[in-house]
Length: 166
Image (tube, rainbow, N blue to C red; front, side, top):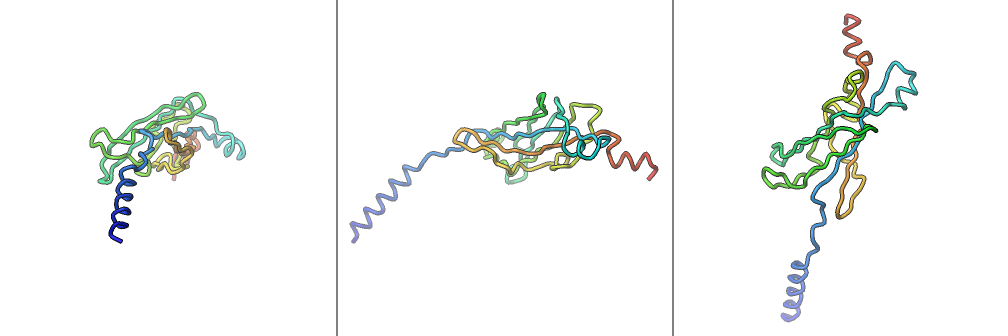
């Protein structure tokens, strides 16, 4: 019986040493879209025909388990209003792991001065945690957020109330 215990122990050690490598990619990507909703249009156009806003800036801020900022970056939207922010898995400041669940993505600026009032739809104004994993493989991990929306000044509820004297 002791010989069997030694064999089992030896197999366990060999298996532990031959663990599969960690297949997490060195970065993850957060992608989304920024669009303009025009409240002066009919409801269907307002709700379903938002226009992309090229040149909008979207930022991401990631914190470690001690709530310290370990990564901040941003990206500008392309001609279709799409952004892609690549985030390293390791923080440069302290070499700790960066987890998507400890990041916040938010609108930073609109690429259209006429449509520049941030809405908080999908938490674009206050910040959204990337949680929708849309692609996972040994060399790529992508999370989708948004879409985020801006609107016209006259569509902003606070501006309407102020103009009405409330």
